[in-house]
Image (cartoon, rainbow, N blue to C red):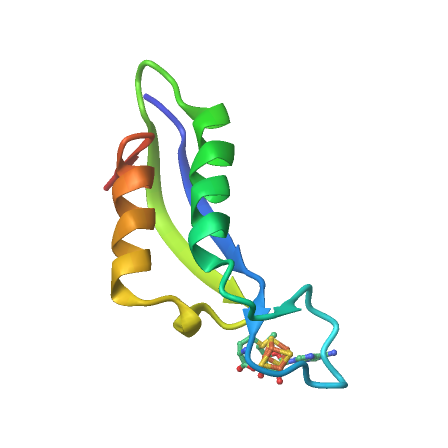
Length: 86
Ligand SMILES: C[S@@+](CC[C@H](N)C(=O)[O-])C[C@H]1O[C@@H](n2cnc3c(N)ncnc32)[C@H](O)[C@@H]1O
Ligand code: SF4
């Protein structure tokens, strides 16, 4: 039986930078599309013949809600090529 894992995806962009915040983030500068491409490229390192099973996915930030529905779709489609979502 293969191991199931949880996926954490960090979206390190915010409209403004709150002074008290210790989380890694940058001011949003329209690089989200490029970041999604790099996330998928990084995820490709984990591609296996039998896809790793993902039972939870968590988005943190930064501000994940800055991503558009189209950007989220692109991310999920890329990840579905690599992982198997239960
Ligand atoms: C990092 S933010 C990410 C989600 C979103 N950007 C927001 O501000 O709600 C998640 C939570 O962490 C809190 N937070 C930020 N910096 C913190 C710190 N240094 N210690 C504890 N909580 C912090 C924020 O107030 C927010 O409620
Ligand atoms: S992650 Fe949240 S708390 Fe931190 S700078 Fe962004 S909006 Fe502010």
